[in-house]
Structures are given as structure tokens and as C-alpha cells.
Image (cartoon, rainbow over all chains, first blue to last red; front, side):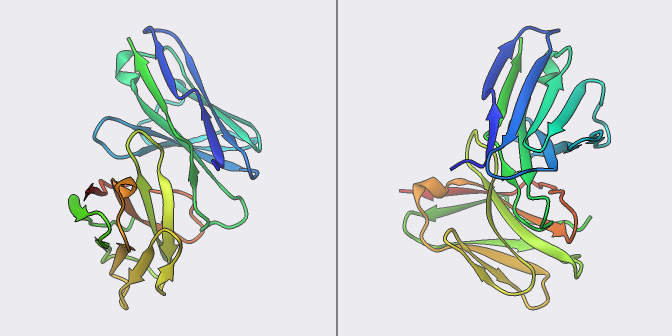
Length: 117
Length: 110
């Protein structure tokens, strides 16, 4: 069964609204979660690393004030796309890995397809 | 970051083996070789990983060259459900991050 649950799977909303995406680890505690973005026919691009109880680490070029990340518990990280615009339309994917073994596999959610009209 | 090179696409017939090559000539001694695959409209799925020795699991086999500068993912009997983009990724020991390249798009013919 799925070890990482992502919700919602699809969102369609108007330009200017904020959208929150949830990522939950179901079978283990995740001190670290990752958020990726994937545009059509492109590969996944890491946006940020979400750390439980501390600030997220953003990759170069990703606006931290636009993509708000909260990792308040060991099983939940949220990504909020603030004041979304059509160019933010993309496939957003989260992942989580065990905190104990650094080379254990990452488990990915099924992604959230965000469409901004 | 050490990088990998994969063919853009490969085709296979159902029930036949698929050999997916990956070149990583700048690999360091502490880099693990990871493979993930992504089915259409889904998040990636872990396939297998290894360091120096060949590895087998229920999904696939990973053959690693003696000099570690290349590796091959082997799907023993392709099914239509194996049609996906396969990513070969180097992951340094202690580093949680995964850097995805373009991957290889595998098409399976019935």
C-alpha cells in the first residue's frame, strides 16, 4: 500500500487564490520531506526540503514567500502556493524518507495536478 | 554533482527482458546508484539501488560495472505495466536529495 499520501490529487482554481497541498507519511515518521514540481514533458525539479520543526530549505530560484512550506509534525508537510497564477500550473509531488538510514528509498506521493485559470 | 547519462527512449516487446543502460563516469566512491520509475500521471516509484555489487529484488536486477562507471537496470520480463520513465540517479552517502535527469522512456509493445 501507499506509504505517502498526497491530497488533493487535482485542483482547479482561479488566478490569485492560494492553494494548500498536504503530504502525509503513513507508515513511518518523516523528519524530512521533499517537494518537487514537474512541468509537462519535463523531469522533476526539487523545490525545497521540508524539515520537521524548522524552516524549509529552498532550492535556488524558488521563491520562499510564494511557496510556503510547513512541517509541523513527523507525518505531515504542507505546501501552500500563494496568490497562484497560470504559470504556477504544474504537477506537484512530495516525497519522504526514513530519518534513520540515509540511503533508504524515498517514497513519493501520487502528485497534485494544479491548474490555475 | 555527479551526473548520469541515459538513452532517451527504449522499446521492448511484452514478456521480453529490458536492459536499461546508465553511464556515470564521474561517480565517486560514496555515491549510491538509485533507480526510480514514473508511470504516467503518478509520482516516482523506487525500483532498486546498489553501491558496488549486483542487486536483485522482486522488481528488477541492477548490474554494476566493476569500475562503477556504468550500470544496467534489467527488467526480466516486461509487461505493459512497466511502461514508464526510468531514472538513474546517483545519491551520495548521507545525502537525502535526489536529482532527476531526463530518464529513459520505456515503451512496451503487446
